Amino acid sequence: MIDVLASILQRVISIPAGIAAAASERVWLPRSVSTFAGDIDFAWDVVFWLSVFFFVLITLITVYFMFRYKRRTPDQEALPAPDHHLPIEIAWSVLPLGIVVVLFWQGFAQYVNMATPPQDTYEIQVSAMKWSWLFTYPNGAVTNELHVPIDTPIELVMTSSDVLHAFFVPEFRVKKDIVPGRYSNLWFEATEAGDYDLMCTEYCGKDHSAMLAKVTVHEPGGFEPWLKEESDYYNKGWSMEEIGEKLYNTRGCKTCHSVDGVNGTGPTFLGLYGIEHALVGGGTAVVDENYVRESILEPQATIVAGYDPVMPTYQGRLSEQDISALIAYLKSLGN
Image 1 (cartoon, rainbow, N blue to C red):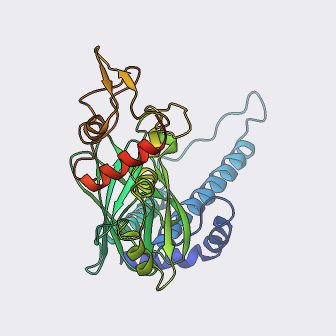
Image 2 (image 1 turned 30 degrees about the vertical axis):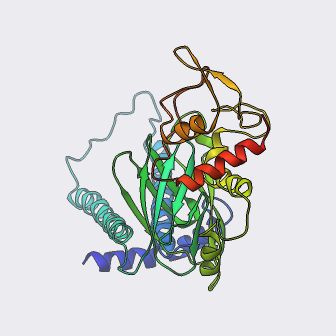
C-alpha cells in the first residue's frame, strides 16, 4: 500500500519535480554524480513542492477568509459556528498522515540503502585529523586527496585521531560524522569522472574551514595505473629530500607548517632544523634528528613555547624510512 501511495505521489508531482530537477543543477543543489543522489534529490523535490503547495493554499485560504468573514458594520454579529464537520476533520487527519507515512517510507528506504554497502565494495581507510585527511588504499598507498574508480562501489572506513570531524561530498550526497575512538562507515558509487570538493562539516577548531580536499573520480582504466604509481616513492629514483617533500605535501604537514617563513598553527619549517627552541614549561631543545622523530611520534612530549598542543601522533602512519625522508627535507630548507 505504501509503495502504491508513493507511486501516486510521484506521478502527482512529476511536473514540478522535473522543473526542480532541472533547476537544481543551476540554483539550489550541486550536480548529482552518485548512484543514489537522484533518489535523494527526488525526496528533496517532493518536500519542497509540497511545502510550496501548502504555503500557497493556506495563504490563499487565509486571504479569502479575511474578506469573506470581515465584519462590515459595527453592529454585525458573528454567525454561529458549527460544532464540527466530520468529513473535513477526517480529511485533515488522514491526508497529512498519508503524506508523512509516504515521506517516511521513502526516506527510510534510502537510509537503509546508504547504510548497507554491497558485498563487492573497494575499501579505503580514512583518517581525519586537525586539519587534514589521510586516505590509505589496500596496497598501502597513502594520499591526502581521495582517488576512486568510476562506477565502482567504494566503502570508506573512517576514524579520527583527535576531535569530531565529518566527511561530506555534496555532489555524492554523502555525509557522515567521524568520531574519535570508533569507526564510521560510508559508501558511494560515483557515476561521472572529475574532481569534486570534500570538506569537513563539523567545527573542529581554528582551521576547520581549511580542512578541504579533492575527490578524483578516474575514468575506466585510469585508477589502477595511478594507484601503482602512487604506492611506492622509494623505487622511483627520487632523492630522500624529494620523497620528504612529497610526504610533507600528502601527509598533512603543510596544513600547520609552512615552508615560507610564516608561522601558522605550528612553527614554519623554513630554517627550523638546527635551531634552539624555548619549550612550554621552561627549558629549550635543539631541532635535530631525535627531536624531529619525537615530535612526529610523540608530539605532546615537548611543546614549543607559543603554540598549542594540537598536533596528532603519526605513530603507525609513518615508517622510519618516511621519517628519515622528512628529516632530509627539513635539512634542505636551511638552518
